[in-house]
Length: 207
Length: 228
Image (cartoon, rainbow over all chains, first blue to last red):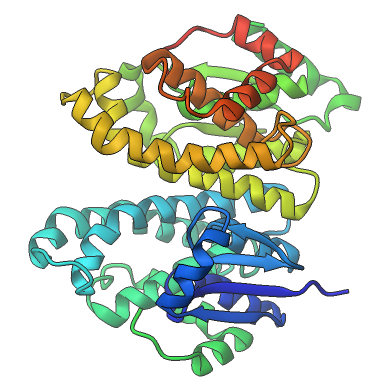
């Protein structure tokens, strides 16, 4: 029997969007719980690490956005065709995670979530982070020849990176102009019918 | 066994047709434990030979452009490179049976590892000073950075270990790479901040049990001794 899935997060895209997209891609039913701040306060002590997103599988909770994404992907054939491919998917995802950890210090200023010198941070943080990470993605796309990052089909790291690229392009359209292959990849991933359907119909949110 | 022994053994294995199913493994990193230690431990626990390449810092710049992401550790499986320490750890753990006994358990192992990564990053300013890589006020960093990060993460671990019945593992009932990750960190902490984790007795007990795993105990005794 199909497990009962419940994904808990706030009612915006954020760190849960990748998992929502994976469920959509796999065409798997799940309960998409968007918590209000008040509901979050009540739910927080029940979570494994005091953070969301959290995935509930037949009543059991697991935390950490990438662990959740990988789990959903593995259960539904979206994690590479061999163990070595899965490992490369993981490596690219962790490389993105390292990039994002640094990049978000600039990006939160751009989003207006935190105050600060946006243009200064762009030069000292945003651009160096971008130029350390995206050449690796371009290289990987060229080596792969399938149009996807690893192997001959879409995996969860394609979804992860395409989501980040869409977010960047929506707020700062020229930021990735030197990485056309990356933008093409994002369009390719988001054109996959099951994923396009979710993107076209998902609740709107600013981030 | 010395790296040369491992290399010769791998070469011999590759010449024997019936053993050619076993890949040759090479792990390249700096001459410290840090981000390569769990992988080394997994090989040793599994009884699988590997080339344990330790690159002196001065030799790294020349090697860097030859790696996929310009970083180490780097695993090579039959010459095919794989970067990123957690991808390496997870890959080896899965191959050798240290990734949890079910997909959900494996997800929990991943979650603990990622939570540990978050904690480690929070702790970094303190540890850079402790290990002599940066200047700073150790006591101020302990108060502002170290103690809050510790209490948050080790509070989680203490509860996990207790809820797991103090069975010697942070999740499930078998050794996983999350156990190895935490145990190695606790070892490093004990070198630099001896009483730092005294408030987490179940964690310390769990780590003792992990370290008493026979092959792991053997590795710990014979490995090069490093401060981190």
